[in-house]
Length: 116
Image (cartoon, rainbow, N blue to C red; front, side, top):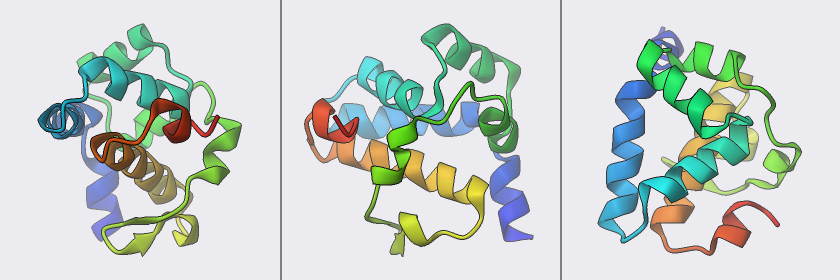
């Protein structure tokens, strides 16, 4: 039941929180977009369409053009849980996105965040 509630959350409700978190740490909305687009394969117009449609997280990831092949290099903890150990594939993608935004807010370089 808890997962259903998370998956039903809209990307549009989470996105401004990501931007706010990044901006508090002197990062930009453009950097947030770049990170999310890198992970999901959306371009900025596609990202905006998902926001405008009010897509839930399940739909957002289901319609993502392509999860970046280097997503497997995303490791570490989000909310005390290791992202590489999350069992549910959709929840793992959500946690990957959370982890990337955390790294952005922590001041990591874009090259390291994008696993280049």
